[in-house]
Length: 360
Ligand code: IPM
Ligand code: MN
Image (cartoon, rainbow, N blue to C red; front, side, top):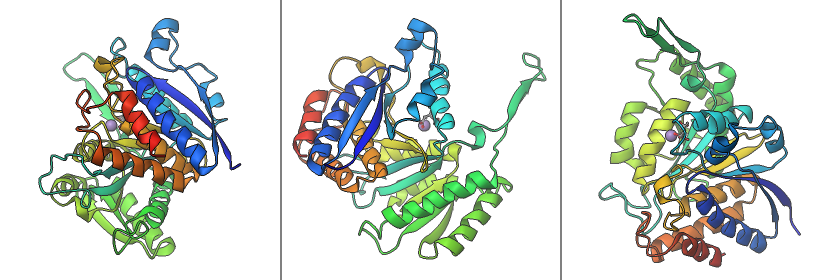
């Protein structure tokens, strides 16, 4: 028998529990086939718990979650809770407390999936965004003074220190080395592109750019280096996505460009991400949110959550099992489901979960 992994499962709100149930089917099937085991423990963090108890996260939550090898998250967000409370109190709180300083977001068009980009297919749309996940504007200092007066003033700063920048860049270079186009056999080089705004944000991106070239030159001479301004990146993501291999960027820019990336890969039914602490506990999620209007109908697409499970196995070191789940998903997008949209798949949520699990 192979290894055993302890997984904390946070189904969360809305359709989260439905898609997580389907993700578990594939994870357990892959574990069986590839000879490891998954010991899963559920936590009820989310909107319903908050409305019932008034508590967002119990004080023990972070300590408890640190005991696990990984976290598998459904979605956070409840229609009866004011926006921001659960997102900041659960999702961002866990990212920060568990120091998940990388947000890894593949932008990959699977066969059979429609993209709004005319003339682009699975060969062109296949890259990964490494988003810094615990710094920048998300945690920069700020405040509001003279609130409610004509002179009110608000400040929210983009703050990065060398340590935060270096550890993110090292992860990205390493990822380009192991998962770049050359490593995957789909291109001649492994390339890391820095996405910034050196022409305007001349302090923060001066730091990023110098660190990028210094680390690249000294520690990763075999990785090609590119630089793109963030606004231009948005254009190329639509016009020439095939240029990209692995991209690395700040928290805020990464948040924005990965939603653009998600729509080019078919939308929220398929986009998955990992909040990664390479030295600690990482958390994997479909990035589509809780879609409350579809809750309980069995029509939501579980593929994003299944892909998040595959990313979790890859990070745990079970790369073969991870690739098998992704291949099974690609088989289902190519040969089975009619659309990624909720209610238009031609199958129920549970049937799609079964289709993938059966292939494993
Ligand atoms: C994401 C989300 C979060 C973020 C929100 C819900 C706080 O948009 O994971 O991309 O901004 O990081
Ligand atoms: Mn986002």
